[in-house]
Length: 174
Length: 174
DNA sequence: GCTTTCATGTAAGTCGTTACATGATTTC
DNA sequence: GAAATCATGTAACGACTTACATGAAAGC
Image (cartoon, rainbow over all chains, first blue to last red):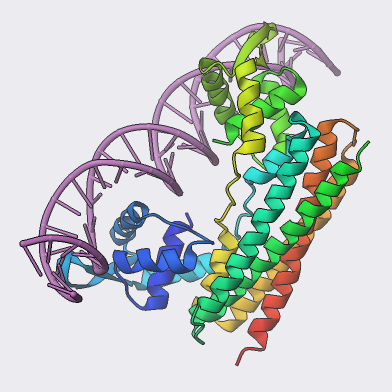
């Protein structure tokens, strides 16, 4: 049930937006935190409207519908942000492979870890590039977006270090 | 498509197992990497059998069916581990909240980050306790399980530090 | 006039969660 | 004999992905 709060939150931050606006904003801002497809988005907008959390505040050209958050929606959003405990994501494709690494021979295991470390390094570089490219403002979206991006970099660096360590553990194993 | 490889991998490691065996093993070993419910498991065993990646190798009391991995299954497993690139998990409930933290007042934002830092600290302690409680063997499952657990601890510590840093960033913001 | 961008909607299929349903065997 | 454990299966619902489908307006 997080997509709905992502949508609700962006509509609140933008002070009104269309499905199309949101789609663009998801791509550039929420893509690494809570991605959403076009089809999911329009579906959710329909449900949120039906439940009275958002409403159509204006209609534009080409069938454009601009949504605004309602009082009910704002309450739900604030409640979700501050009072609902987040669940910790657990599923991790790469770690599952590490767990099962005993099923392939030593050479392939080592090269797997080396390759993953490289991939992570590329991702760090990409993020750093993105950080420079983004025109950081001093609004809330920029401020909190920067915090989130900082987490992205830190966690990738931690992952890189761990891959290196794990590789050495395997190499020095009997 | 990772559940199937988790199942395949555990059957290979155990050298044969029933749905019930796997259910128990998922709970104690894969719970923090790739959790699965009973209903998912039995469904996947059916599909894997139909596709010839596993087969029933023995039948026991109470309708018990023991599965073994086939040659096809083993090839698919090794291919998936060593050659299919893992996808990086992106969705993170807690980070989405941080991104939208401008929607609640400063006080609630700070207390949110404090509470999350505390929760992470509890999780670190829990993991450390689990690590001591587990009877570490010197088989592959233990060896690689330990590597994965080490990642769990490192990433939680990184997250804790970040929560602390982010809190201070907000506090010192104009 | 043609292409791009804006703009919305729906359908099919997979994956995951929760709950229901049933029964055999072992342990106390 | 009752309770716990072993053991499997299915149904309903929600979330996510991919693909299909359509059309209006703006830019060149």
